[in-house]
Image 1 (cartoon, rainbow, N blue to C red):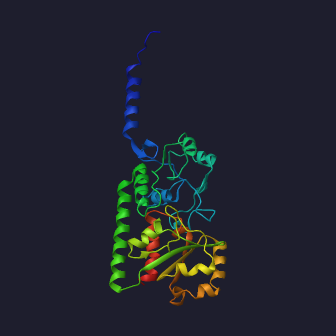
Image 2: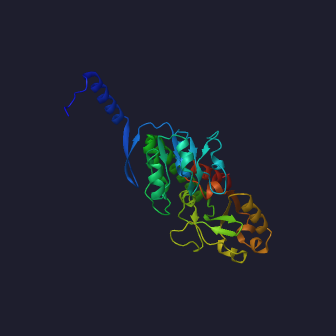
Image 3: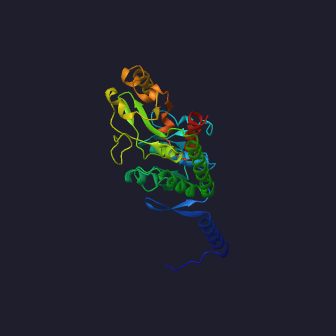
Length: 306
């Protein structure tokens, strides 16, 4: 079959289109290798709480997100940043059809995304998955930087991280100068009992950066997010200078209210010193990202540095 030359003008248009497309895309190194992403994605879907937080901190409002743990929408601390957003799944169960309905040009996914889900999502749009790092206090910064690179907003997120680090360092200095007791334990109260949260989580890492010495009572296995539920008889294992109690929903709040009436709870030294602080579990035990870090520091400042 003879080779047919394209007319000069259509060929020129085709070449310009290809060059323009290449110029307006960049490669992002992900857990699944390099992914080509538009330089300024307009239709973003986030499938991880840290991805939603990062996008909003960078000035991008996603079209869709997954629910927070214990809720039927996104975390309450984001209310000031969002009017509404489509829900496309829960933490570990993504609704692929709902994602497809949003016609995304970028999907920001969690580090623990399965290969099967990645195969489906990456057929819809470029899908960015951070490498899994397990439980480390600094992992959220690497995730945020990768999401920001995909969004074309690396400078904004680097500045947001620097702001968090600077504010936490200032608080640590103030806590030391005032001689404030610095031992702290974070507990998520569930209907089946309290769970001691790992000292290597995002939130406990923020506490540590702000000058607190975070403890888990030796109850949390390595590379686990929290302990097994404690009985009320074992509450002495969580006695500390400060006790932060997180609940995710009304069931947890009711269980905590009941526990507060028990003699075992009342005997805790931290209770007698009136240093038990109730906090939002959606923020303190589930969220991550620059906005979440600032919200946790807001809570700490109100309690420790009024």
